[in-house]
Every structure is written in C-alpha cells, then in structure tokens.
Length: 120
Length: 114
Image (tube, rainbow over all chains, first blue to last red; front, side, top):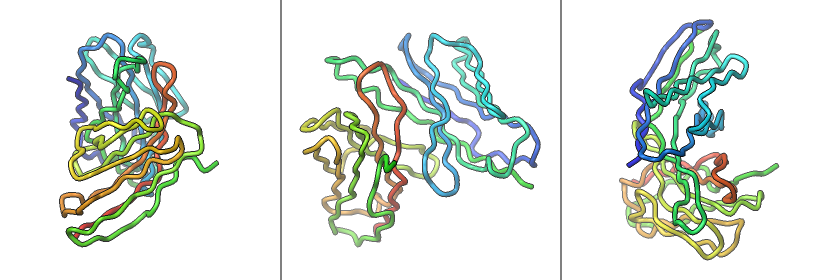
C-alpha cells in the first residue's frame, strides 16, 4: 500500500527564517512519482514540483529546494528566507506511473498537509 | 486560460437534499477526478475517470455518483446529502498518456450540509 506522512501539522516561523517541511512516503513500487502542492489561503492547489524515483538529484527553484532521499523514503521541502506570502498549507503526494491496460490510473495519494505560518 | 472550472464555489444543503457539483476542463485531458479535503486528512479521492464513458471509484465513493458523457465534463452528484459530506471538493484533471502528469485542480467547492 502507498502512504504519505507529513508529521508536522503546523509550523510557525518569522520572516527570513529557513524552514523545512518533512515528507515521508511508503511504497512497494520501484517506479513512482512524488509531488509537492501549495494551498494558499485563497484555497486553490498550486503545483510546485514533480520528482520521479530514478532522479535523486536535489532541485532548487529560487528560494525553494527539495531533498529526495530514497534511502530514508523522504522528500523534504525547504524554503530559504521565508516570506509572509509563503504562508499556506503544503501537501506532499505520491503516485505510481500509469500503464495502459493495467487498470492503474496513477491516482495521487496525499499526505495530511503541513500548515506553514510565516510571521512578519 | 480557463483550465478546470468548478461550480458552485459555495453551497449549503439540508440533510437529504441532492445536488450536483459541476466540473469542466478545456485542456482536452483524458483523466478527471474528484477529491474531498477535510481537516487533518489531506485530499481523498472520491471518483475518477480515464475517458468519456469510463468511471471508477476512489477511496471514499459512498454517497456520490459521477458520469463522464464528454471529455470536458465530470459532474459529481450527491444523491442524499449527509452532514458527513460537509467538505471542500476539488475537481482535477491531467493528461493520461505517458507515465504521469501534473494534476490541474479547480478552485474548490465548499459544501455545508446542515
């Protein structure tokens, strides 16, 4: 069975602090995909990143970086120099790849979400 | 760029009433799905569809029906609303070809059942 755990329910930091959001996943598949989504107070879900299981390179996008470690089944998300606009709920998600004819539609399994509050 | 459009954004129902949440996408995506979001539980899959005429159940399908008569539309029907169905509902779509793809979400529909 697939499972995603975001143990941090809520995190509060002061602006300009660095913050790391943890994501631990469980899967028996050798090929899988991991995602991070952001849900700002306005409620929409915004795609941040997709990572496949064969690519363990860390990724950096501006103030955002992601650390994927298969050895610990973790896909952590770090925001450097946080800003008030980073305040949101962040979801980590997992899926297996779709294969035609297999009945597998690659549905996303979401973690419970981490609420990040960045105070000015 | 409409993307995924959900209506209504807010709805209040009485127990036992029925209603339909509408979802439409203009990206020609084969895959469409409905999730519900509840505090502390993330998003859970209700129903999904891999193409017109094809639907299947997700994790929490009870109390909901779907149909997919066209590629663009994927309505979610509540046959007899219950307070346990108070939630925020998200429709999502993605391309089916290839290994996997980004899910595009609608803005959400907040449903309250009294």
